[in-house]
Image 1 (cartoon, one colour):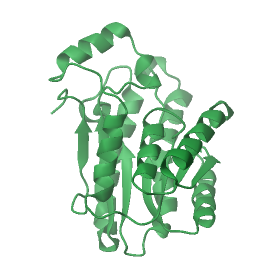
Image 2 (cartoon, one colour; image 1 turned 90 degrees about the horizontal axis):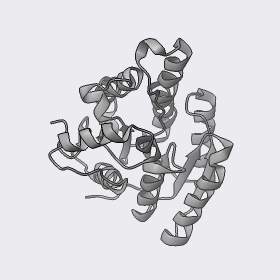
Image 3 (tube, rainbow, N blue to C red; image 1 turned 60 degrees about the vertical axis):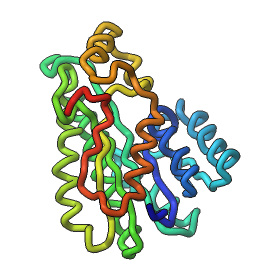
Length: 249
């Protein structure tokens, strides 16, 4: 597999899947942007950046930006491009939120916020990133979808909607950007041990684990492995890589 040349942006990368993926990008030889949204995540984001520098010898830039805000997305890409003085090779659109209520228990503000972060945030970041990738040297865009976008999930109607919508967005983009060697793929995780999963009902987690072919909950490194493969697999485009232990096939 050919290594992409340039820096990487991973949104929502102060913890969880984002943290693991930004460190893998650094291990793969890329300078990295560590993105966070709330002030309470700043210290964690800085710790991730410090690890990328100290462990992998890469430059790391910490940027606060809410992906639901287009202007903040644009400013993040511009700041990173100037700081690294390099091309943007990898965008991993990872930032996401969810509600855990039945749809009729949500307010419209609740589900609008999920749509703004999970779907519009991805579209904003991709829209801002494309001009920095169209030099024909190859680039990778990865969207973090979910098993919930493939099979649906109760109490996650708004979340499932945003994750499934990524597939149409991805496929249409591939038709537009293939001439520039910009590849777009999705990763659809199943149960990965993150803070988001830990907030679920333990009995539901137990039942879901039993429903899988592989009866265990994976660690974030599994998603980082999938991301690294997709970043450098030159003939893989427009695909959904399901990392779910055989729960949904």
